[in-house]
Length: 202
Image (cartoon, rainbow, N blue to C red):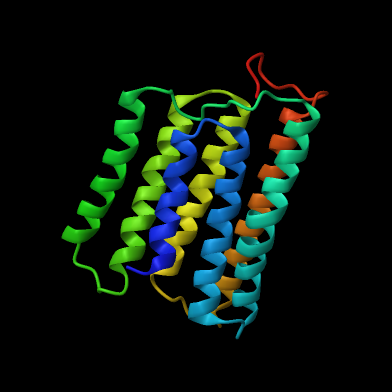
């Protein structure tokens, strides 16, 4: 497994143990930056699809989304502590178990050796995203969970190089980019002081 993927797993786990919304946003930024780096190292910018992917991962997910959420949370003067999962040994154990199960799953799957690390990390990211989504109904936690889920999908996409010349690939990548931007706008409206967030927001 590459160093980048190992660091990605650590970035997935750290915000779950450090109860801070700033750390959660830093984690999202780190995930996007690492995925952009992996994509660039593997494919460069040889096609339109490569460019769309790098803009999505390296600009939107690594910079724009965390920065926009940070500005809203700072404007609300939100307390530094924010648990995206329950602060208990059970939740932390579930997070670690999710990673172990994901890697065990990938080890038993009939995969090419080049694909196996991506499937393991993608499965871990997926399970941790679902854990976050299931742990809290707060708007900020749900936003973090959804963007983690998108990053998990991106890891799976990187597992097997796609025929980037295919218009369907370009369309799918562009659609994911638009979905990310749309979700960001929606969550920003929910988190804004004039939005209709739930009573426990963020």
